[in-house]
Length: 311
Ligand SMILES: *[C@@H]1O[C@H](CO)[C@@H](O)[C@H](O)[C@H]1NC(C)=O
Ligand SMILES: *[C@@H]1O[C@H](CO)[C@@H](O)[C@H](O)[C@H]1NC(C)=O
Image 1 (cartoon, helix red, strand yellow):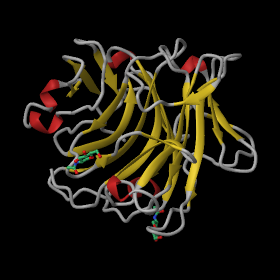
Image 2 (cartoon, protein in one colour):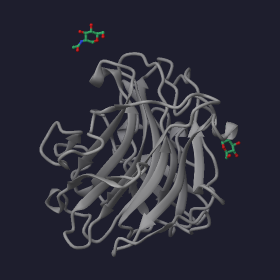
Image 3 (cartoon, protein in one colour):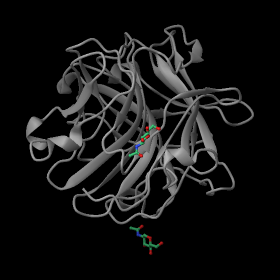
């Protein structure tokens, strides 16, 4: 994730938003690729919402599929996330994360991510790894992935450590997942991370509030899947490598999606929530389903796409 650039969601009317780059020169070559449709964004006309979404630069392509809120404040999220592995070429990354973000300019853009990724350049293997990431200046000079810089403070004896590999699901078979929550502890102001798919919730660690300049009063939340690859090379699979329409046991998902309020109370994300925005960069390659409410899995969406996307 060394080459990310922030996307800006520009909303011109209640029905259309476009994903634009914070650095316009990077998108001048092929602006049509940057158009982002939304199903139900009702962000105010003219609003600029910064999304922690990578865009392409000269050599790299970054694709995203997911959902995001655009009218903070929220104070965190919990979600069950499917775990999928895949074989990657060098320099390719794919993954998914809960993302907390806030800020109206790149310099002040604060972001925390916790999720899963496949990134052979980092780990020297195609295994799926748990990861965390933070920045407070829009990916410029602060922050890092996992424990490569001071920032995230892992808990002693945590059930999952940033960078740790985990076993993936099997297409049409075993469903493997992780449930994580990332929210602001109202008593300390720190952002705390828990793993909650075990018998009892396990505290994984925290991001001290001092790391950030913009998250004290809440933030927006994104549930994003992403792939990064070299331009003109076939892209890696996203999720299970299958489109969201394949659904249960076949497509990657976020389930039991919840938001936290300022008192650390969790409540279900509502599919009809007015500021919920569908985010994608190229849905022929990497698509994302509608958000639906289900009896057993709460609020759910599916995402993904096969390898071979060329852009
Ligand atoms: C990468 O993995 C290969 C195969 O497992 C191993 O031979 C090699 O030493 C590893 N390289 C590093 C830098 O860890
Ligand atoms: C992507 O998913 C949406 C929502 O399910 C669907 O309407 C659309 O047709 C899909 N797009 C492609 C290119 O498959």
